[in-house]
Image: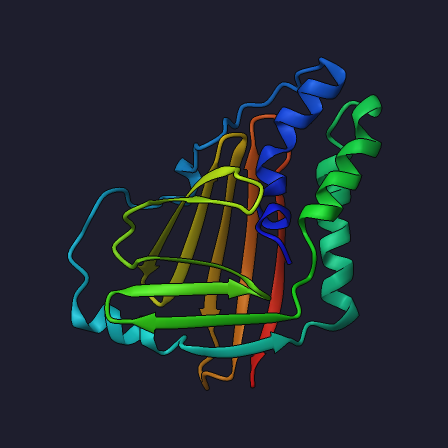
Length: 201
């Protein structure tokens, strides 16, 4: 799966505005995730935090079945319903393309860095939240940051048109990871939010 598919959603607003010349009003602006209370800036990652991150290390496969696939579709429909009628068909298509249910998830923790890969699309960053500049195969620019927040591992992809937050939670027995996805754009009045479950191989 190409990086473009992961990052396509964050550039949806630019596509809609270019094609239709219409700007969709929203109180949420790209790059603004205040409601998620994400820390900003470099911090010292202590050993306990590194140990918590290390628990995620491994390879996983999608285990959410049709119920979670339907949940992605429902989340897209909720977001699309808030668009103007002339944009809904295009918006639905682009969001469906940019939110595939990935078959595999890999998390590799090495020291104070983590590499997170959905299928074959991966990003590596320090666990202190320092953003790194990355590009998709198409050359689209994005900033990627990783951070532990309590027992949750978070990945933020900050694009020109919006943001995607992947929040990973590990089950008590360490056998499953639940990924909470939230996509915010200034041209999506309602964010796209859904959950996917992966089981350890």
